[in-house]
Amino acid sequence: MTTAQTQELDVQPTPLALLLLGREADPRSERGVECPGDLPSPSDPDLVERARAAKEKLGSRVFVLGHHYQRDEVIQFADVTGDSFKLARDAAARPEAEYIVFCGVHFMAESADILTSDDQKVVLPDLAAGCSMADMATAEQVAECWDVLTEAGIAEQVVPVSYMNSSADIKAFTGKHGGTICTSSNAERALEWAFEQGEKVLFLPDQHLGRNTAVRDMGLSLEDCVLYNPHKPNGGLTVEELRAAKMILWRGHCSVHGRFSVESVNDVRTRIPGVNVLVHPECRHEVVAAADYVGSTEYIIKALEAAPAGSKWAIGTELNLVRRLANRFASEDKEIVFLDRTVCFCSTMNRIDLPHLVWTLESLAEGNLVNRIEVDRETETFAKLALERMLALP
Image 1: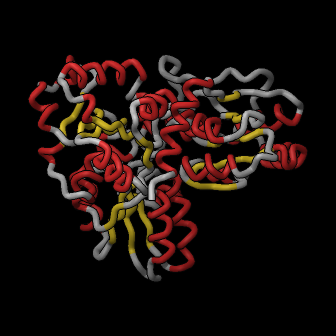
Image 2: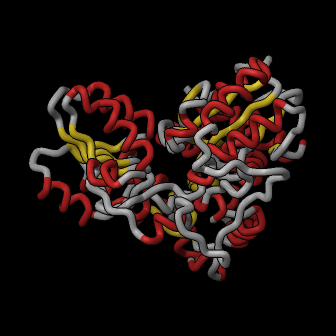
């Protein structure tokens, strides 16, 4: 990101941001994929042409998916863009594509593998592109939680609802225990369905989406919600608290959306009179309460498309998308800024860069399958069951 671009969005790159963007290194914490052969340098002026040539050579055999939070250098090669579920469904709708290259993170590639045919191979350009939120709920932790609910005598009353931003293992757990998956767009409908099936919901793994949907959209109270901490005995909750709760929220969050604060909202209102504050429902409850509009990534895009010329917007979501929208609507005199003053990229999304994409496409063009994401049969069966319940929601 250039100095001019950061100034345009009123953000300031921090040392941590520079580290996560690969401009500095910490050998104690950095992890990635050792790619066989030579990974081209990010400064290689031939990268764009090499990507185009490899993609052209593969033709209809490859279908490239680009999540909204990806870098522009990667998005330019995407056949379709969207959120994780839309992209997985787009991949399933292209059975002629032998290779699905998912420019996103690990759980997204898993979902694409679950929904595509056995003949299709899903590839993630960098296997280190994970998701901190998805990693906050492991299969072992969730199984232990279910044991706690069973011992409290309430498991039969609980319906699990898992956010799309979860691992295949968690989706499988959800399917096996009669639950459904949700996206940030249909979370309210998923919760309505769950409460028709049982008296309580175990919401995984994002506490903020669960709390915001239950309280803001469905009229439950904050007292109806309890927070289950997998790192504490019994989740840090008493049997009485579990029995009284309607929403059992997993202690997980998005590291990007979780950083926005009420102070950020107040600050931008002071700096930009008349600004509309629009945030993602993965933000903290107090931030959502202070915002003017709340919605999914697709909602954010549509809201800005429909916004009148001359309107002002502060957006609380990942910076790559905000920057792209600011550039897209600049000609319409729409002022779009990032809600926070400092850079807030999704660090794992940014691991999918042009060098890794070029390496992936060239490898596939040469007949070498790399970085395949493959979900085992049993996990796929139950995860798909949970996804199909979501698709059946009216």
